[in-house]
Length: 143
Image (cartoon, rainbow, N blue to C red):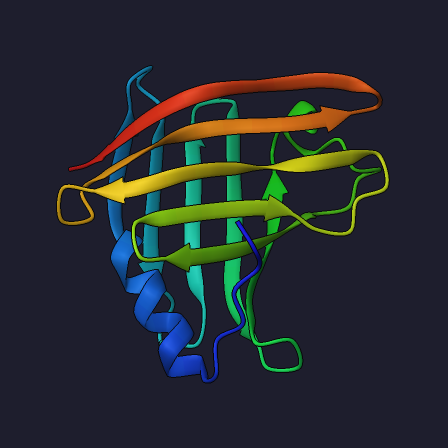
C-alpha cells in the first residue's frame, strides 16, 4: 500500500477516529486507542502484565503523514538499541497499514483491512529483523 499523505491534520485525525476504543485480538491481546486531552495526539496502550507498550500517534505537518513513537516495557518488544520504534499509519478506505519507519535493522509492516463498520481489523504483521523473516496473522475486534 503506498504511503498516504493527508492534506490537513483534521483529515488525518478523521482516519484515526476509526480505531478509537478497546480492541481484543483472537489470542487475548489487548489494545486501547484514545485521544489525549486537546485532541492533538492519540495514545495507544498495548498489552498488559509484564509486556506493555505505549504509542503516541500524531500528525507530521512536514510530511502530511500520521507518525508515531512506540515505547515498550519489554526490551524484546523494543529491540531498537533502546530507542522508541517509529511507525507510519496509512488508511485508504478499508485498507489499513502500520509501517515501520527509519529502522536500519528492521523493515516491515502490518497490512490489513478495517471491516464491519470499523469493528474488525484482519491482517498480517510481516517484517525482517536482523536478517530473519518474522510475522503473524491477526484478527482484532473492537469491544
